[in-house]
Picture 1: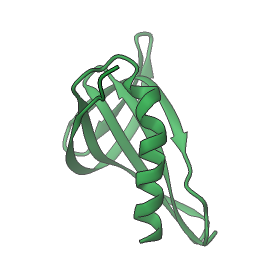
Picture 2: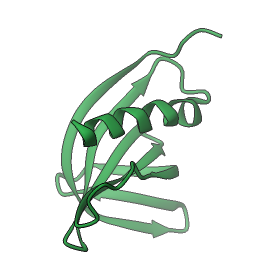
Picture 3: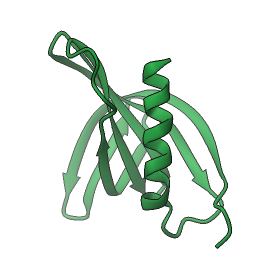
Length: 112
């Protein structure tokens, strides 16, 4: 099987809210970007400081793949952010296959 390549685009937009309707769930950024969620997985790197850490949401959407993040500071959740969009060369199985690599990448960001 050929290695899947991908391109990453930084977004860094606050999420206005997460919503649902009979057709499914979606997120809307403060810039008006609509992300129609197909499936998602929570990613939690090791928490070294329980007073200040970040949690992540790995999202497959109709519009592509996205990384969301939320900082927890002094036991208060800050706003969700759409951090980046990831565009793979082959979408088949990318959600599951890229999750482990994403966890390693996010963990290294937290520790650096």
